[in-house]
Amino acid sequence: AQKITQTQPGMFVQEKEAVTLDCTYDTSDPSYGLFWYKQPSSGEMIFLIYQGSYDQQNATEGRYSLNFQKARKSANLVISASQLGDSAMYFCAMREGSAGANNLFFGTGTRLTVIP
Amino acid sequence: DTGVSQDPRHKITKRGQNVTFRCDPISEHNRLYWYRQTLGQGPEFLTYFQNEAQLEKSRLLSDRFSAERPKGSFSTLEIQRTEQGDSAMYLCASSLVPVNEQFFGPGTRLTVL
Image 1 (cartoon, rainbow over the protein chains, first blue to last red):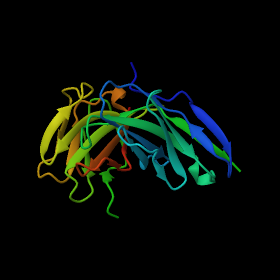
Image 2 (image 1 turned 90 degrees about the vertical axis):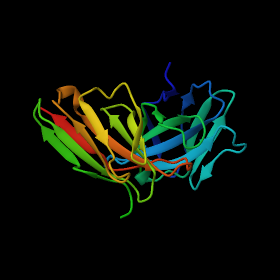
Image 3 (image 1 turned 180 degrees about the horizontal axis):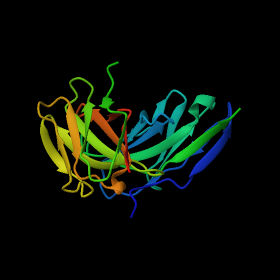
């Protein structure tokens, strides 16, 4: 089974509107971390936000928030007040185990296009 | 710039040739990771180092691939006898354990003709 599933290959959003990018995950490890990265056309992966499995509150970083629903195993990214510069690929990723554990498992990504 | 750097950014080679990529992590980061990203996919883990020790290798890392981090600073990834299926973006990331985030470099795009 896929560890990370992103079911939206592409999304469009009007500038200044909010958008939700979906991510579901699969793990039996009680300790894990969830990440979102942005990959513009230049190719570099830019870290956006992190949520730990034991965190009680949803993570927020500026215009980014993570809607963490543990029972549903979902970790959706919400971008508020979209900007043209938000157009990029967005990847959800998971780390299994405690902080400092090994590699990240990535989904297939969602291409977000912000329309002026 | 104190981020992760990778060299070269682009590499075009003929099938059967050897190629070597370099990654310079963020200074004092003790973990260094290599990932491979093919078109339309997310990055896939290849291997990682804790200081100079290579602690894990993915099954994706065939015996034609070798990675080193000799002094616990920069790392090299070598691919011997390249094949067309090796064409991909090779990403390097570093982190400071136990901090969660991995910081990625700009990647090396390999094209095997």
